[in-house]
Image (cartoon, rainbow, N blue to C red; front, side, top):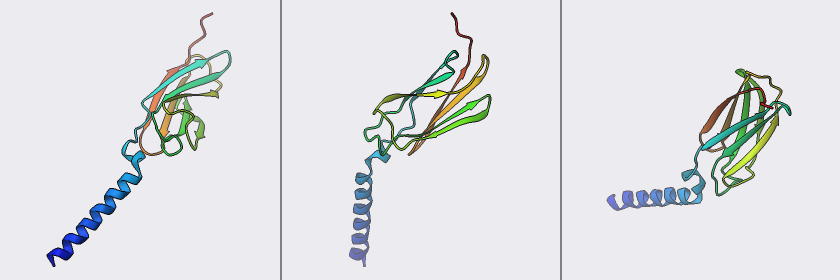
Length: 125
């Protein structure tokens, strides 16, 4: 009986190890590390720079970017991959006026998210 039980444990351990080795992106999955927001009042555009390292950008990527203006969802963008292995930029046409608060959340398709806020200010010209 003891041999029978230990054989099954070994098989289960080997299967678990095989699954872990076949899905390395889950072991190394991180949420986005950084979000940098800039707003061009004249062009009415929000630029979002996202830092999210990934060796396999089609398997582990930022799958969604949500934009709130003054605590109201104004845009939600879904993605199936990310354009670069480390850092990339998305630009969105978002109408805003000085003192509006823009909040952006970038979600990783495997785990975690990062949120940043920006207060729209008048361009200094």
